[in-house]
Length: 115
Image (tube, rainbow, N blue to C red; front, side, top):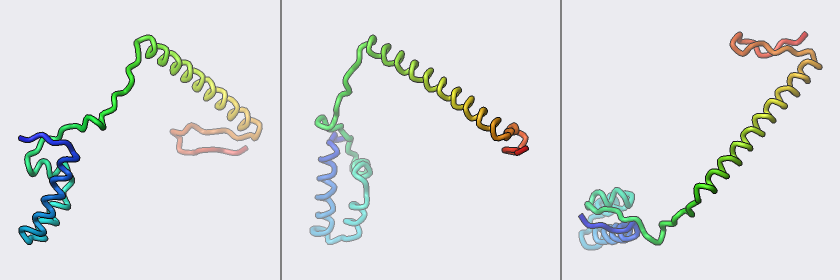
């Protein structure tokens, strides 16, 4: 099994389409090959796909201390968001009380009752 990059496979696929059209005078075969994705063409031709080293970008690695600090910051943000949600719920309840609207439990089927 030959190993090729995706770009090499695409190039070979284009050449195969041209060969089927021009040399073999078989437009149906050319269309069939052209309709394949590059990965399908590779499978059909028994090519292994090698990642293109130019396209591989390594993510910067973080130290354990950086990751722990990031986790701590995210936990703080989560706690702040949860506190904000509770504040908003309290404000909503106060507005509903001021308007005289009583919410019924969601399980009972009714959404709101006005007095």
